[in-house]
Length: 252
Image (cartoon, rainbow, N blue to C red; front, side, top):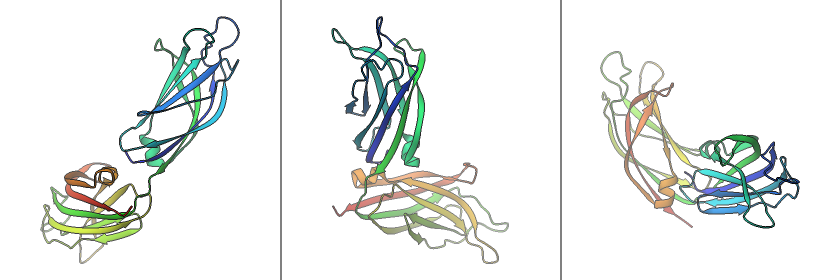
């Protein structure tokens, strides 16, 4: 998963289990992503519908991809009593950067669901500065889109607003480019898009599929050896494989 900052807006609870025998619960929440943890304020007599309206920031490295929220009733004497928990996968957040406040079902310690938490999420990718080297190595089993003979494939590489193009290889569905492309990185880029085409002299070039190459591993480790990525068609169907290696030289 990409590096960056996750902002969690803990808004309120709806119809939570009130675990107090007398009076109302005093709910508070703990929020954790990976090894990082925050604690909300306690809402005295908040009962089933506590309102927090608090925001928490998590600086996340490459790796953690779930948010865990546990709600407790604060006890003056003895251990705090669990009211329930919510687990929120962050994959959608990393892709969309923001998820507007919405409700998530709360699971009680006994496994049953009761009540909801209203939570909003934002993601701010870490800005990297340096030079990215994309080594376009080869492809195998590409779509043969020519009626006669074989495709003449080439690749167009998109990195943020920069676009570079490989050379055209004649009559092959297993092209070997072995070309390097360098991109200046000074923004929130998280992936490289590679579009493959068949060169046609008499009409528009035919698309052969796309590959999305995530960059979080090369940003954290500096290098990703040759890796095979599925070439996907317009409906997500596999149309061959593309081998790419990455190297990133940081400039601070």
